[in-house]
Amino acid sequence: MIGPALLEYGTEEQCMQHLPKIVRQEIVWCQGYSEPGSGSDLASLQTRAVSDGDDYIINGSKIWTSGADHADWMFCLIRTDPDAPKHEGISFILFDMKTPGVSVKPILLISGASPFCQTFLDDVRVPKSHIVGEVNKGWTVAKRLLQYERTSIGGIGGGGGGPRAKTLDEIAKECAGENDGKIADPDLRDRVTQHRINDHVYGLTTRRSGEESRAGVAPTFMSSMFKYYGTEQNKNRYDLLVEMMGVNGLGWSGDEFDQADLGVTRQWLRSKANSIEGGTSEVQLNIIAKRILGLPD
Image (tube, rainbow, N blue to C red; front, side):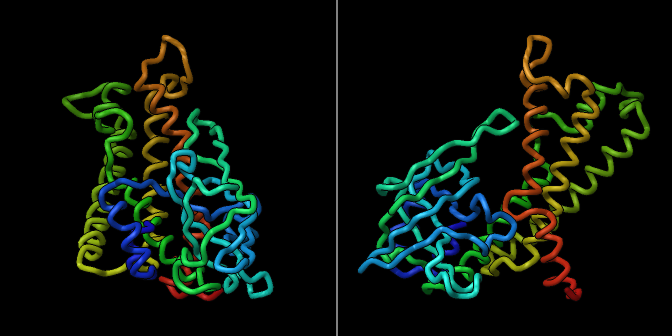
């Protein structure tokens, strides 16, 4: 996400410093967007940056910073002009996670994993040269990066194998039985077939978008459609899996459940976050309505 944004908005020095490490996978980034009081209304963020010579002094906190406890650098939204309209007083800045004043606390999730963190910024000094794009115009960079993120997240619904290397058909046959090589339950067979069709059609659409991207076409507001449909498709897949597995799909621990079953349960819980992360499904529907369909406010 940050690589394409740097190519479009970064300085030559920023690109030369970071892009080779990104390409060689020598650096891990995290995203400092959401705050405890600024989620869907991201532009209401309150993390402040005060000018001090050639630096900014940053104070505030970010939440749901995926992988922040393992990250080397953060790309972050900060408020550099508290008196400007909320979309115009924001800047996009990069900083090393080892900078004094940066501290990270993992957040335990219902799925049992902790990929998300809260990051605290206490008098963090960052050179002004780390600003990407123009000062107070970071919202433009942020929106472009979100388009890359949503396109990426949307790909999770495109027919992946899931936590076990079996198709929905195979699992359905194990759980509901089979008749002449088909899923025995006709209603379940229809639902699995419909899901496979949706996966295939969506996969073709995302592949076409990927080909356009490789041809140099930047993401558009269609990224919101990919994000919305892909996440809903992924959630539907795990809902169907858990329903087929019955009590085996609701295990948390114990010898009576194998690891694959426990993995499905956790992935089912984790899939619920798909409609929140990267912009909620409600936000995506608003974007689709306004920017793609041209519906009135």
